[in-house]
Length: 201
Length: 104
Image (tube, rainbow over all chains, first blue to last red; front, side, top):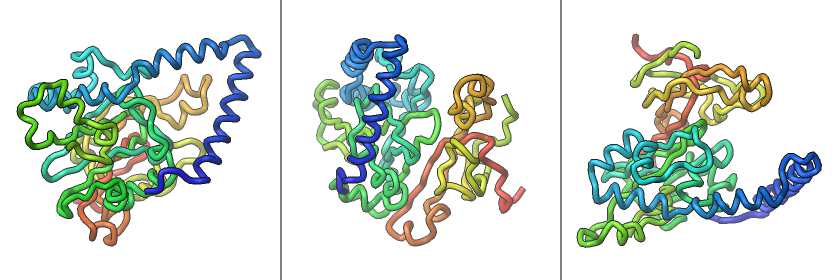
């Protein structure tokens, strides 16, 4: 997978210019200052980290009852851990678990919907037209470019975040980790494993 | 709130074309047959909310579903030769109709 491209850079610089124009207008009208925006953004980003998603998965690995609650009502499970989706109260979270026979991967083909509060800001490739178009059409090829080769019999389940739900993947617990603490287990969960473009080692 | 047409397990078909303006039915899933995987209750329709202002405030709240599509249905046989694929998308009631080929 080519992780950046001229096209992507062109579209993101266009977006930057539009954002600057919007902020300038809001400031001129006295609605909000760029200092206020910076403060709000810094506050949000200080809490929006992939460690949140990793902590959720580690708890699910050590507590099967928590895993069951996570899969049936993820927002309530987040409440138990004192977490929330942070940026958008009405967003419903859904956790989908990998199994021996099913591998999940998330995408937003229409734009770039992503559980930012739990995974941190999304990587550029997640927002690229290439990933968004290809992962629904040839997910095996895309995952192989990420270094992930799945058994040909494994069902790939692609979750296209087309509406109000956001998704997080619960990867499988790696073998040989029986002796690890919940905190140690969390360090095995990468951002890409929470998206589904990697597994946990 | 509009009526709920479908239950979990029902076979559905997406609209053949996208509505003009903003919509959250992806082109690649137009006219495709799938199965209702879960029901999320009434949610303000993005197609109307995107307009902002009064129109957004009056947006209807159709039921939102997660619909599961088989990779072969979406892309044809070629893709599935490389392994089983299922695509799940969150779609509003108004994007869907009963699958005309499903037995009653």
